[in-house]
Length: 152
Image (cartoon, rainbow, N blue to C red; front, top):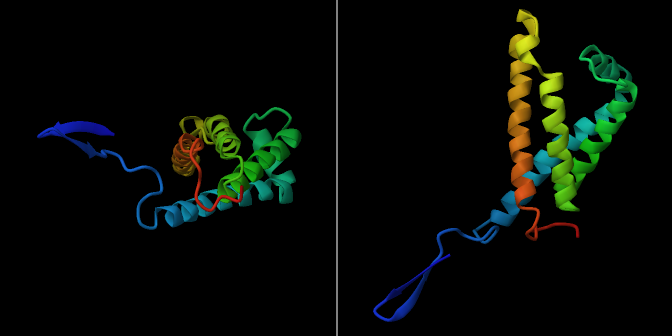
């Protein structure tokens, strides 16, 4: 907020609108949470439903103990995705999602080391995950304010 005086009167000018004060901003924020969190929670659920195939892929990428890491990361995605979508424990939910994406993105989508026929696909997945990590950081930055339509 910027304060200035004009002819002896105090004039208050808001340079940045507070979060969720604009028309439909709470509803749009909820929709964004549902889309972002829902997709990541669904991916977390797939870690459990397709654990063997995912563990095989993780093992081929050099992930240690892929049989344990796949359900662990599935739990992070499920917790984080549902937490962001519902507005429950947003600091921990968004933090879990960012942590997952920060660690797994360069490990699982190392396009620079992929064979030529896989480079483009790995780069697309790498870039998608970087965008998702950025979104998780946005939610993390907003975790200290009350979220509209949060369950509690």
